[in-house]
Length: 310
Image (cartoon, rainbow, N blue to C red; front, side, top):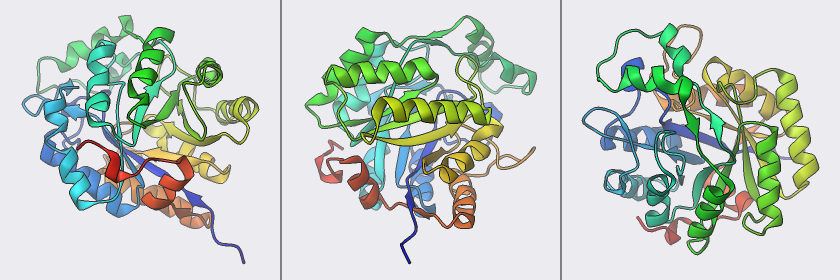
């Protein structure tokens, strides 16, 4: 009997979408982010995708000094693959967003494949009370927010990190982003094997219908053949259904509090590890196993934990 297929679980620990007031379980301080990442790794995540927050008010930050407070601790206590954002928050300039990945040379960094409307304002229909003054305007003004990722921006990030040996989680929010990724493959700036993270359910990107998932997969297969590794993330309540589809279709999965605060209808997830364990339950039912960090490194041809700068 053949061994079970291995699935890479990425856990996005804390991001720029949700504000701290929306869940008491969202990691904000460096200690909380480190503990959350380690908990997700222990639960079965091979990769942890990391943003940082201002520990005083929870505002998204790309200050390398804040990242420096939790990155070494994660590395000391786990062999999990660390993936640092270059997305930061849509309100940040590209040079600010780039600094943590540039300075710390992680094994993986995230990279968005296009400029897009990035609407978060509908969250105000569900959440009315905020602890910090920045949170409500941040959401309300997102109906006039463009997340900038021009061809020049993308090339700059790819070229800036090339000497560090950092590979990328290529985030594609719509079909056009897959074609943009193919363009940078043709230019020699993205090299196989590369991780394509297809994103579903953000206002401004592709939807969450199963046909949307199939369309993105078919398009990626046609453009990239055997040169890529496919993963998905679904936003909000779509997280687990879309992760389940990917697992059943031979893909990999991303979960975590960056993408969804929930662990069932009306129930907040108490930790990132809870979401990792939930998708592992699905995988068990499908006779799938989580890839270890070592297996993920082999699948993605990563440079290894010993070659980062933290």
